[in-house]
Image (cartoon, rainbow, N blue to C red; front, side, top):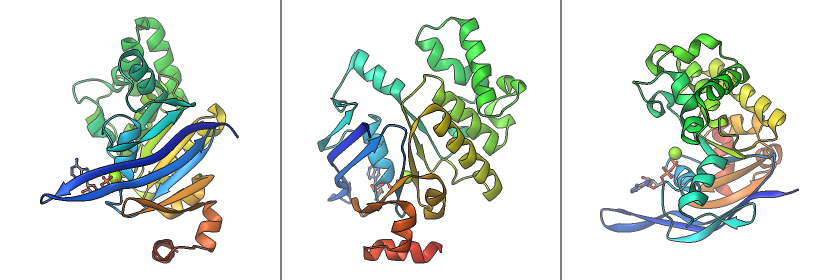
Length: 251
Ligand SMILES: Nc1ncnc2c1ncn2[C@@H]1O[C@H](COP(=O)(O)OP(=O)(O)O)[C@@H](O)[C@H]1O
Ligand SMILES: [Mg+2]
């Protein structure tokens, strides 16, 4: 299998009341092309910080992040823009990640327009993307507050797909949705991932969700990856105490 992403020895220290603590503590993992990798662990264990380091929203203390073999951590300019294109994120509350004054269609087209794509071509592609995420054309002219959470999350996925990324990081992307809508979004992600050979890093506190969707799972606890493997195996035979607790709390 071909590696897409290699994360090596990531470290990030934050301070709580002036006392340092390692939010991400020597985290290393690989993600293959076309793979769906789960990252699970309780709230505060360092999942989002890991994602933010990969996407340049947070600067780590040390470590390395390679995309197709090339270091990405300290790239600037054109290379950084290329990283922003290749690695997209979908967040928990899509309503917050769209500009409330812009229609969903404009939001989806933004990255294409920024890349210099002509308006008509961008529009055409935006409608294709809406279709891909199973939203009708009329959603293009709706505003974020005029759609449901699930519909907005579909639009956010369309926007993430727009620049034809290699990797989409979903950070608790379904956590704010109710259970049936959550299942639909999961189904959509799985479909897109298979059809387009996308790689997915699915961050969730929900082990059952990860089991349904992911080829492999990393279990994170207090800033460290404490266990990894095929979800069914990890759930059936958890090796670490923390994983056992996590499994017991879900199943
Ligand atoms: N910008 C920040 N400043 C200080 N502490 C932070 C910051 N971001 C996250 N943290 C802390 O780092 C830890 C890990 O947070 P996070 O990566 O968001 O965890 P998760 O996504 O797994 O819930 C938490 O204790 C959180 O409070
Ligand atoms: Mg988080």
